[in-house]
Image (tube, rainbow, N blue to C red):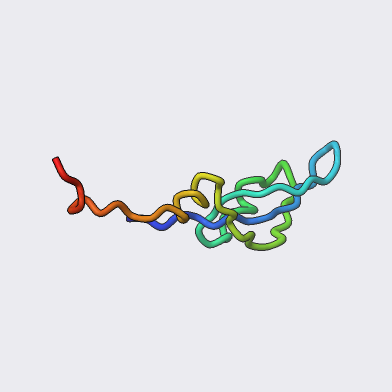
Length: 71
């Protein structure tokens, strides 16, 4: 199974000004190539992935023991 890409913060120099946003990449090496030659791209760094609300709730659940079920 392929690993999930990391989230990277970038700064793009667009015609209307600079913006900060993020993209996903496994190693960060191909990010600037995605925006050339139209936009100047500066990689700020890797961001920590935040858990979604459903992932947080899932972590709090206790596993179900199927052996204890009576028919």
